[in-house]
Length: 590
Image 1 (cartoon, rainbow, N blue to C red):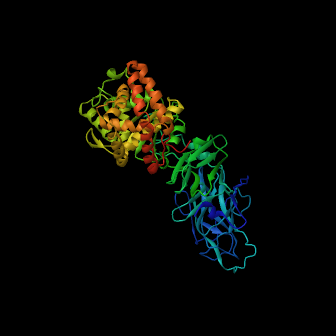
Image 2: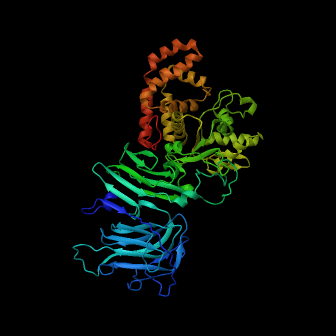
């Protein structure tokens, strides 16, 4: 069932869950009546709260609403101060879809002066109705009013819905349908089904207090912040205010537009469906609302904002990684890097370094050990490689990472502090595993990196290039496909590839490396630009350095120039079928 079929009813095509906030005096109550027993009301730590009802619903059925029992107020024995970043969830079981219920939260035990309200259209079955709590208000009472059904002939004694429970939860604003059909919907949520699209609006999506207390963190490493220095928050988990979008399979290449007060973002859909996490900094400072314009008939299953544990939102689309602001430490300095997992292949770690120099301190020696001609398999001293170029972006498989750190430990090679920190992160994230003192074996996934010092268009190209290396490392089926494709390239056709890779200082003696670079250079730009890139861009670079090769290269291109695009098309068809990505763009958020 899609979102619209839940919310629609005859003559009604828009649902607005409206939250109103008005000032009121704080009223405390002391509970003298018998506590209600028909359902539980729990606090933020799961503790049961004492409360009683204002109406005379039967004992044990204080939350059962019928045609003749339409209004009740639930009064806490002790007023609740919820604190920042909290909502109140009222779970109901509805037997009559299309019923409308109004909720009101008040600081007064007698009701009135409600500071949070919402009106909800109920579907059948279990629904969680959610109202935001206020950091500067105490909660004394919750009131529910079931709206009359015009023209209904239903007996007044028939049950309409019942309350299953009330609980204080982390802030939730939006809509969620679970796999078993349970629905959560908050006030401040609006859904409109238009002729050619659907529009969702979430008012005040990111709780201001939650945003204020959540630093812009990516994945934390071993209790350290991303500079490698111990954080005063080590051991505690900071929330990550995040927009969550989930949709089912069936839509490919359409676009979801996401508008805030200060930014408009786009999310390209995948045939396979997707679960996407978009942290609040992507949408500016405390947006008043988010508006999502959805393709018609997109099987939307969730659109909500909530403060998540960082581990829940560390998996990121590559476009989100490119768009994420740098992490700023308490000192005001930028962290060395942001660290993410690639959402398509979550075992792949993605480092976004603040600049080339920082990236070099972590990865330059590793680049020479793994890929550089004349250095492969050797741990180079700083003085040996100081004047040589590493890479502007990097990629490494677990086997090479384990070999590098094992050899360093075995030979007592003096790694720098950043390299030791990298070793710790890789072990923690299980890309490599410690099998003995200072000895490592391959774990799973891969490591790729880019730098913020690269220009925007290069960051996009580099992260696409590196992501295809990650697929080559992590997906045996793709690796076998690429290996076969490289094997089909004749020695005569390989001449240009080895010429270029040799000029780039790759270790051309490694067929594994050549196959890997072959596919990455073909897929780093759109297929329509492949021929120009190889015949003009790369040729110009080579001829400038080696003018004596001008004629041989021209003759080569006359014979093999068309092969670049045809080979890129075959590679693109494979990755698109499995992962939905295309040549030149391995990301969906932009």
